Length: 287
Image (cartoon, rainbow, N blue to C red; front, side, top):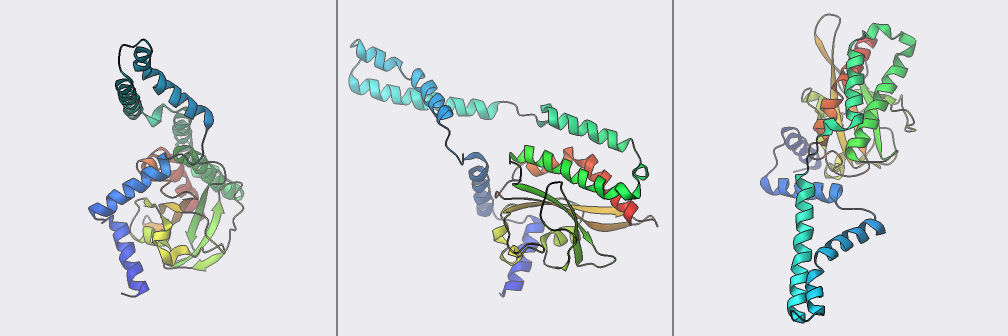
């Protein structure tokens, strides 16, 4: 199998999410590693964890001090109590309810989306539509950073549009405010993952680890690729004739692998639906 056939097979597997059980287990383990394992050591939280569990396991040493039990029994019992208390703490943290809708930023975004739907896109004058598009991308960036727990600069949001009636020629027309990556460059990349996501329909698509698609390591606008995971939202708009047309896609990329793993991509798609719909209306007006 040559490289093109291998790439095509990877694309089909990715779009169909047709991975075997072993691959899914590996993906789950990688998702936990990249999103749960701390990347930096913080002294105070570590001291708090050791002190809390050590205090819970201290009673055998008190009994040893007064001679009630032997040394071996004290150490074994203390070790078991320390481990049991740590496990109970992990279970309690996992069992605690985590309703994203309770977050004030999420609620504010939903309310802001409701406000946008109350206004017609025609109220945005043509000279200000580019600013309105960039504002929508900025809102998506802020919300995606909160969900993925990333800092400023780690995550980028771009709008990629098809040029005219072309099916493969595209242009990065807008990026989120503060993004210094280039815009306005046309390119013809039928192997672009976002293009394949659009060809497959309107469902959002996630790439957990970009390195798995070796052929796509060339960026259409950069000399090198510094992002590791991507989230694509295809944008299908209504034409003046009443039909439907795939206008392009929103690309959210992150420097951390598996940034959109689990429920993160779905949360972005659901809570930002009004923003994406408003973006589609802006693009439809520009058609």
